Length: 609
Ligand code: AGP
Image (cartoon, rainbow, N blue to C red; front, side):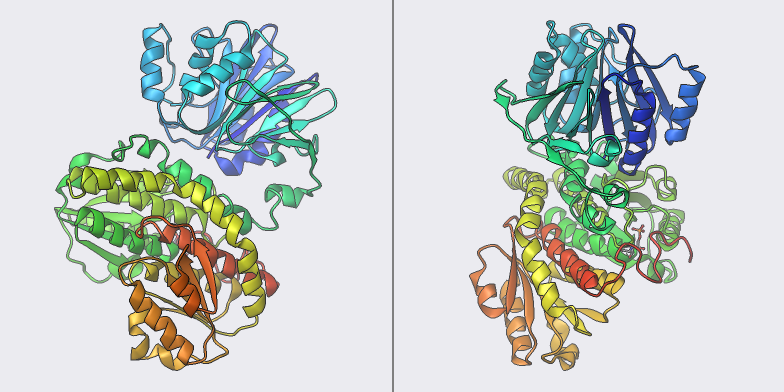
C-alpha cells in the first residue's frame, strides 16, 4: 500500500506535493520521491527512509527541482528492495515519461521482456517501472491515449499517475481496484490515493471508479473508460475536519482499517496469484517448503488466531502436520523442535518479544524459520530464514483488523504453495482454490456493504450485556476466538470463546437469557454439529447471533439473528466470517462510548516479555 499524489496548476508545487505525501505516509514510508516538469524537461529526486530524507535530498538539489506540474510517491515496497533506484517516480528510457504507482502489476515480467526487446533500458527492480516504458512505447503525441493503450496491456491491482515533459499541463491517472481521487481547485487540480492528501487545498472531489482513466488539467478533469468512451463524473464537496481527514472520513482508525481489508488482502495476494494454476512466493526457497517434515506456528494474540486458521488450511491442502502454540508458552516449554521442522512466526509488528524469542529458540535448535510480518525491516525479518510480507499498510488502531485478514491471506498462500510443491492437490482443485482466493477482496467489499447496518442494529440491541459467549467448531473456532478478543479488547466486556463440542463439559452452566451467544456456523464439515449446539443453547434461553454462509436457511431457522457472508470454499470462509464479528465488537464499544482506537491497558506492539 503506497501513497501517490499529483498537482497541475500555476503554483510552485514541490511543497504542496511534500505536504500531500506527509498525509499519505500511513500508507507506506520506506522510501519516497518527486518528479516535476521544469523548462520542458522532468527532474526527479528519490530518497530512502521517511519523508525528512526526501526533504533533505531536495534541499541538496539547491531548489533546482521546481515546477507547477509534478507527481510524488511514498513507498511500501513489494517488488524490489528498499533502494533509491526502486523508489518512485519511475521513468522511461528518454526520461520524458514519469509515473507513480500504488499496487501491483501482475504481468510485469512479460511486459518488461517485450519492452527490453524494443530497446527499453530499465533502471529499477520494480514492477511499476514497466508502466513508464509502456506509455512511452504507445505515445504518438497524445498522453491520454498512450495511457489508455498502456492500461489495456496491464494486469493487476493498481492505480497510477503519469506525467510527460511533452504535455506539461496534464496528468493522467488510471485505476484498477486501488483507490484514486481527483481534487478540483481554482485554476489547479490534484490527483491522489486519498482525499486527505490535498484536502487542505480543495474540498471539491471527484472519485475515480474502478476501471477508469482520468486526465486532470489546471482547469478541470476528463474521465474516459478503457475503450475511450467519455464518462460524466459529479463533483462532491467534502466537509471533514482535520481529524476526520486523517481517518479518511471515518470516525475512527479502526473503522477506516476495517474498510481497508479488501485492499490489504488484494495487495497481499496480487502478484502471488498471478498464475491461475498455482502460487508464487519467490521470497521463499521451494526446498524449504517441499522438504520440511513438520510445521510449527508460533504467535500471540490476533496473530495466533490467524495461525490457527492456517493449521486447518495447511493440513487440509498440503497434508503436512502442523503444531500450533502461543509463543509465550512455546518458548518456555522446552519444545521438541529441530532440523526438518519449519517454524512460522506470525507477527504483524515484527517486534513482539515472545514471538521473537520462540522463533530464535527454534532456530537455535536447528529448525528453519519463516516470519509472516507486516513491517519491512522489523526484528522478525532478521530472526528468520525467510519472510512473507503481508501488505496491509500501517495499522494505527490497537485492535488488529486489516493485518489479521492479510495474515490469513498470507497463510492461505503458504498452504497452497506447500500443496502445489508436494502435489497434494489435484491441479483442478488447486486452480479453483487460487481463483476463489482471488475473489476474496471483492467479497469483502460486498460483505461490508451488506452487513454493516444489520450488525450495528444487533450491537444496539446487545451493547448493555455484561457477558458474551462465542461458540464455534473446527475452522470456525479461531474466528470465534478472534471475535471474542476484539470484543474484550475494545468494549471490556467479559467474553468467553469456546469449542462448541466442549460446551456440555462446563460452559453451558454460564448460559441464561441475559447472556447472548455468538456462533460461527459457516459451511464446514461439522456444520450439523454446530446446529445442534445452537439448539442446546437456545434451550437454555440464550439469544443466538449466528454468522452463516449465504443460503444457509437451516442456520437462520435456528438462530435468533443470522448474518450471512458470501459463499466461497469452506476453508476460505474464516477470512470473511471474522468481519461481522469485528463490526459487532466495534459497534458495541461505540454504543458504550469507549475509545476504540486506544483501549485501556493495551499497546499496539508488545515488546516486553
Ligand atoms: C490484537 O488486536 C492485539 N493488538 C494483540 O493481541 C496483537 O495481536 C498481539 O499483541 C500480537 O501482535 P503482533 O502481531 O504484532 O505480534
